[in-house]
Length: 172
Image 1: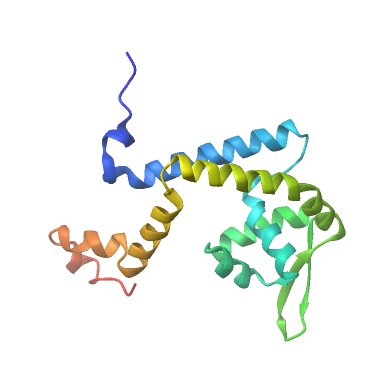
Image 2: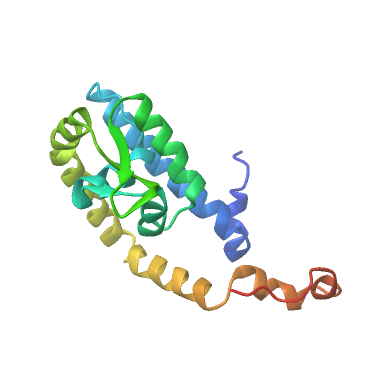
């Protein structure tokens, strides 16, 4: 007998767990593809490399905003990509306090090599989206709903005593 799939049976209460599980499965399959092709590549690098290939040079803050992730997440990827000499940085001509990141020659060659693979990923993702009934649209709607009112602000009034001890609703 197989144990119950708790996240699935919990419905919306396990939304985060379901999203993390789907993300982990996607990342694991991507890692298998890169490994099968003998390419040393981590899926978490994609957004930064793709954005730099499209925009030429961006700061960490600009990348974080464009990718919708934290400054810390981009900084971690930046460090890994710099170690592998796939990106480099230079002083921002508009503001000497900032550094612009750009693809190195090795990074440009890697992006060029990966372009057909990334196109295959995009086609497979579109097929998966169709098979899943338009999950991308549902994710757009989820993100918009969370932007209108965060999960925190939805839970706060439902837990007696929490709003008072938490200092009231957040400013989101």
